[in-house]
Amino acid sequence: MVKIVLLDGYDLNNDLNWETLRSLGDCVFYDRTKTSDDNEIISRIDNAAIVITHKTPINKYVISQSPNLKYIGIMGTGYDVVDIDSTRKKNIVVTNIPTYASDAVAQFTFSLLLEVTGQVGLHNQLVHQNRWSQGPDFTFWEKPLFELKGKTLGIIGFGHIAQKVAKLAHAFEMNVVFYNHLPKEVQENWLKQVSLDELLKISDVVSLHIIQTPQTLNLINKTTLAKMKRNAILLNTSRGKLINENDVAEALNNHKLYALATDVVSKEPIRETNPLLKAINCYITPHIAWAPLETRERLLSVTVSNIRAYLSGSIVNQIN
Image (cartoon, rainbow, N blue to C red; front, side):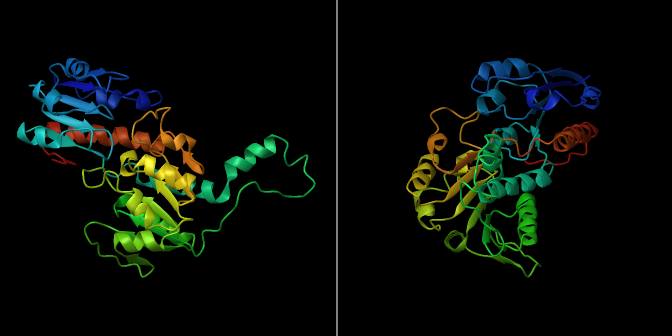
């Protein structure tokens, strides 16, 4: 029976039924594996042929010390946790789950935007602190509120999630533009493809929907921030390292950027020294856009389907 090792199931397994995965082989599940300890990762992979990872990195050294490894299943869309070049050289199959969270992340992207523009959380808190009951008027607001209608949303990247975000923005009667490193053909007359510089210049809201690569690291930095409107809102539900956190924090504190709303940071869990924690108008959630129950159930289902396909000789969702 094939040995299957899951390196980091804690965030996924407390309310899911894993019996379908157990049925595929001799399974060993770990809640957490130290992401900085190559030796622990290697010892847990041991002689397994199939390894499943969510956020535990499988680098060149780990791959070189895992001679029985034949398949790596990434429980997610991004594949920056695996050294893809090394897997190619070792003929190790790598699969991901390309669209499992598209609806959830698009929904969460707008949750972040609506929090910045509608301030629901703040005013709910103030009401419960008796600010309303003790006030002289039928209403009050602590921070500015904004309509989305007529504002321009600029989307960087145009994959599945970005396309869903674009449709949501259109439903709010926003103007929608996007930039993609490879030009895309679009049929919608309300959607416009522009250069990155043009997008940064005209957008009231900039939303990041690209994968992390050497070319996209620190894409948002002093130079690109200087091209944006001073009252722009920046959204990030992709990867934390797409932005230079020091530069963004400085822009927020100097009123050169109105707000950042992000579900991701460069090092997770967030470090107490992260400059975004002390930046003004900065909204941070703990990487939960992907986490609705329905989304995680889909994630597990596709993970099982990917492995079943691999075992039957008909590989699906291979990325290498």
